[in-house]
Image (cartoon, rainbow, N blue to C red):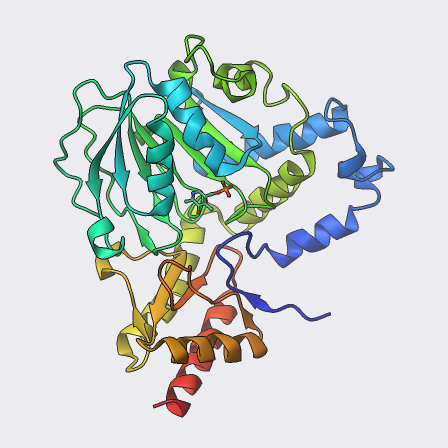
Length: 360
Ligand SMILES: *Cc1c(COP(=O)(O)O)cnc(C)c1O
């Protein structure tokens, strides 16, 4: 068996110890005589799995008691619709467009009410985060929406927007658990787990209790109404059982790593290795405004498409895989999520130095 260094943006690398534990427990989960894939989601043993996953996530993120935690299906993209259906009471919401995922959420919300783009960085290919200290927030906005870390473009909010008292809603799909979060700053946080937490098929919603309401838009599907899921403790129908189990193992792993502050230190160290090299290289350049750089997704280019392609090809052959940039940005992107060891980034930089020397 040989494992590669996997820089995929998503689905992406998971901690090896978690995969090994899942393998060990595959045929007989804790003496149940069956796999987690094979058990009833209403069984006692599964109830423990989902309850413990929730408890560990609450511990890690210090989620206050007045927030509900939901384990749902449909991916992050389904939340683009669920959020306006559930939260647009006045039928108005303000969106900050910092990339494709925010733009998709904004476009989806337009189906359900008046969605306003109050800021955007589209003018420079989303290579920066706009100044959000004094935005034209709508007086009747039900919420202000951000994508906290822009997976495709490699930017991240270091400072939250001034929402002028409105509820903040955030997509944290690609940076959840990478650093501490003050949950109370938000009305709703959600994340598709396949970037930093688990296998595709699970989306987690953390929602403040008072925003879980019965008077949602009348056509809201039962499954997309947060109240349905809150009342049923995420078990209205069969949840993505196995995926939630793996998320639970990853939560325990993050705890063992020292929690979110330790994770942040670990991630800052990794990112600095790559960014410092990009800043000193004559060949490779980062594509993002320095102050807005993501700890998780690092896009870079050589400035020459042929050389980019050559780099990706040779890197793949050397065991550094999934480095091709998103089709809208080109070049390369290294996603260095929680589970990427420092060694992976160090070796990648060594490989880049070598490539640079050979291709001057
Ligand atoms: C990947 C991603 C999405 C889309 O996730 P799906 O689960 O495929 O719908 C949305 N937002 C962000 C920030 C992402 O990184």
